[in-house]
Amino acid sequence: MRRLPSPPSSGPYAPPVPERTLTAVSADGSRVHTELHGPEDAPAVVLAHGWTCSTAFWAPVVRALSADHRVIVYDQRGHGRSPAPGPGGYSTHALADDLVAVVEAALPAGRRAVLAGHSMGGMTLMAAADRPVLRERAAAAVLCSTGASRLVDRARVLPLRPPRARALAHRALLGSRAPLGPVTPLSKRLVRYATMGPGADPATVEVCARILHACPRAVRAGWGRVLLDLELDARIGELTMPTAVIAGTADRLTPLEHAHAMAAALPHCTGLIELPGLGHMTPVEDPEAVTGVIRGLVEEHGTSLAPHPSTTQKPHAKEQTA
Image 1 (cartoon, rainbow, N blue to C red):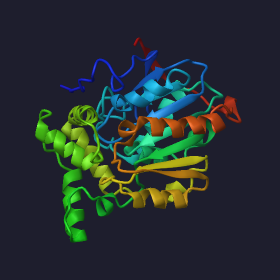
Image 2: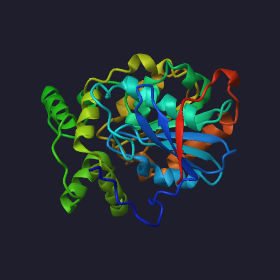
Image 3: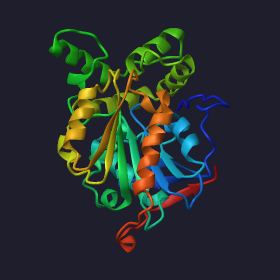
């Protein structure tokens, strides 16, 4: 039985109630839970979360943006309310298919959006960089706390000195199916150490721990194996839209060298924003900073229309009441 996180009922981390929900249907038939927040005719933003997270992860950003933006947020397959894929359903190609399905189902024909991806969500944007839909519908993009390749080589979660031993340990960690169990004081300390900066407040750690622990272990391991041998360097150059890069200086999962490499390879990098002392969970550690970057891109690029609206078709989508 799927566990869903128990989010706070109030405050900045409480997920806002969507204006409506729908199910986008991906190329292989996978169903992708999608939420729409904010005014329908406002500038649009699409948010893609990372490994072991869910739409709940974006709550502070959605809450801040939805007053004057149309915010589209979805659960990556196997996460949150999106069913786990079958055999062969774990791949960067599938991530790209799902993003395309969400954009086509939730974004009206002829409209563009700013697309922001955190961690595996950023990898999703890179994986979809060669898709015509992304090039036509993305006015700008944000790559937040992410990387394109060599994740196990560059990670600094396990402080082993020999690089080979450290990489092997990270490989075992990413592919593990070990149960995480309930959220405890010890597990919260581990979550803080591995994914957040040293100054993260207890409420932020609590919320992140509940979200991470809610991910089914088979799904965690399935996507972890995809991340082990991730190789998306060649796709960075195909992100031709204006793109910002955000990174925490204390990120152990995707250290700053990833951000510098992506910023150097992007055809149109609008800036590399380094957030001092923050870890991997930048959208919840400093939602104001991440929201500010997204707002800036929306103001400059987010209201333009797709050049050929008639060429964009919507796939089948099932709407649900919120």
